[in-house]
Image (cartoon, rainbow, N blue to C red):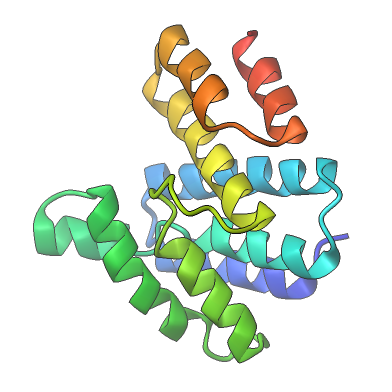
Length: 165
């Protein structure tokens, strides 16, 4: 059962997205993959919660980046998002430690080095799968990701199911 805080954060993030259907579709797709992989991996409740909140808010900086930089470059998203998500989550019923971890994950969701937890690994995997679906990545690209980055059994099964590899 989904933590009611997750549902409220999702609802607020949908409002924050201001009708941008691409952003909304992406965050729901990524959250679904991340949540599913986390469940398949048997994450404890705390880690699953952090993962889901990070999945929902991972692209919080996209509107600002479009306005400020004219694009949604991953490094700009990480830099701006780590700051924005802290304010966004104020009053969400989370501990300072939980907000810190979400901000850390949002601030690294395009960084494939230094992965320091299942929540981080799964967020990377879910974001890649969502982006590959949306952007039509080549089979070779997907297979390379599977060989070089994919680490979880649940992520491997989802990737295989989605892309038929």
